[in-house]
Image (cartoon, rainbow, N blue to C red; front, side, top):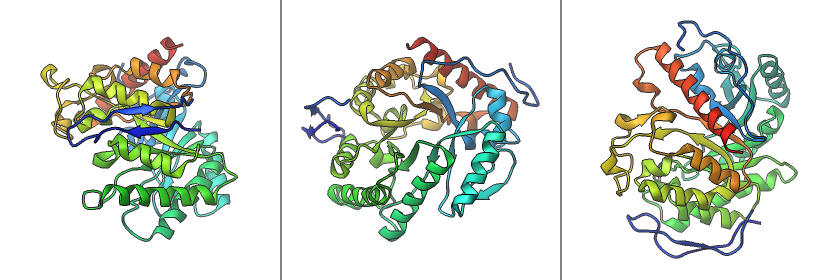
Amino acid sequence: MYPTCFILGNLFSYTVLAVLCISAVMPVHTTAQAQEPAVSASPGMFVSIRESLLTDNTFTSTSEGLKYLGIDAVELSLDRELSVHAPDAEERVVLDSDDAAKAYRARAEQAGVRVCAVLTACDFSAGDMESNIAFITRAIELAELLGAPTVRIDSAMSRERELDFETRVNLFAEGLGGALNRTKDSTITLGIENHGFQGNNLAFLLNVFKTVNSERLGSTLDLCNFYWRGYPLSEVYGIMRLLAPYAKHTHVKNINYPEEQREVIREAGWEYGKYACPLDEGDIDLAKVVRILKDAGYTGDFCIEDESLGKCATKEERIAVLKRDVVHMQDILNRVK
């Protein structure tokens, strides 16, 4: 059972939200070459990566990228047409049937690719609710067929600035609750990412969790997005402690702000493109966050989503940064016992 939380203040109109939780919850190569598998980390926790980082002008295929980086797990992006990137080639595959999904899984496993999460984007403030519920329901079914334990849910909505708080919470609760009800026998979890303006509002996330009231619903906890949203660095860790018991999946990136900007409230997304950086150069102490999650019982993946790659001038630079990211996270996981 999730903790019962009382919201004592307005989270982010540049004020402080306090939450009282009553019960506890619980080197560079021009052509990428295969590397030895990375050293195993703490039991249960492992490094994964968004498949799009491997295939976007970097490696020839997901499988090639994973082999070079020494990991095997990806978060696979699923679009509304149910198409995904092939595990071993530059092509799209449509998962329009159970058999197609099973064939994809076999092909992926043969190529050394493990799908650890399915990434979706669904705007619950647009379109009709039935089609939105149907999409998330099918994503859950496909995740099960692919062997992925969780589905990432995007918290962004096109109308989030015009709809009032309760309406937005109820839209999300109706959509996700509907998909969970249609898959009652499934163990696949849903993780809402703290993404964009709305998703980085702790009050919104906690109210959706409480309204749906399912242990299968929790957070795809992005370890950097609250910092992107403008929270002082020290408050980011406090928010992580509150969300850690709900974590089903994670995204990992980092920002290196000037020292005078780290402990002040900033405009959302302030100079993000300029200061986004590789994982080992950022202000967020990722080892500290890993410990917070581990102490809360999290045993899942840490999915690399390095958004500084756009600064790299060449493919070789991108590959080098990704290798550093993997090594950095593996080192952290091996130290956090």
